[in-house]
Length: 310
Image 1 (cartoon, one colour):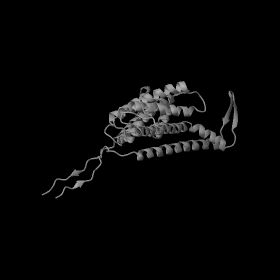
Image 2 (cartoon, rainbow, N blue to C red):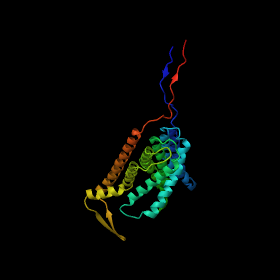
Image 3 (tube, helix red, strand yellow):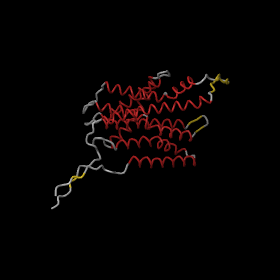
Image 4 (tube, rainbow, N blue to C red):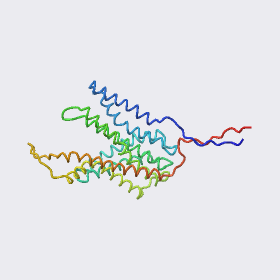
């Protein structure tokens, strides 16, 4: 008998990203319950770290399963996530402190600085890769972006704990829930796009600063700026679409009393704007991903031949 080839099959290992998410979610919920029941302040760091890192780590693990080459190891992705995230947060913090001042261009400046900081961290940590595929660049870019998001969310959650009335665990939990839900369409998405474009124009040992890369950088910076400024944009649109403001006298001056129509319209406009920004970013990501050439794919086996019968 002739040898019969068996079609290539994909390795069906259990999904580690799903286990990470489910176990982490259970641990976070348990931490929330125990913290509320005991009011133990020693649990607050655990609550902050679990809530801030759960979604970013899950998405990085999910993206790692879709790697193209053997050079993209778990240790490299972990190092990119951790070191890239810290470097990005530190660089952005320093640049924003010295370069930005309250102005109409504040959000655009934040977008340009933070995206540049993450791109610089990505280039620094992956400069020695011998093979630079577009999809691997997107995964490593996502790792840097999600690392940045995790550390940034931890800072926001910790800050939300402190209120004028004392410590507020409820506000901390609400902040982590909101930022966790929005994390997939934020920093990780934007840096993944730039990472793919960066690797597409790079040689084996050197990165090239091309017009396409600059266009991608300015594009994701604009998405970033629109995301951050969406509340202000929605506020202006609400005032334009509704009748004039009603002012209330207070001991410290005059305040605007919003109408019921304005109260209902503002969140609709804000969330609609965030949704449109997210859809544009996701569509851009999919275009870059699908246009990438597909080399040998990790997780596929070679065809197997049956023993020859007599």
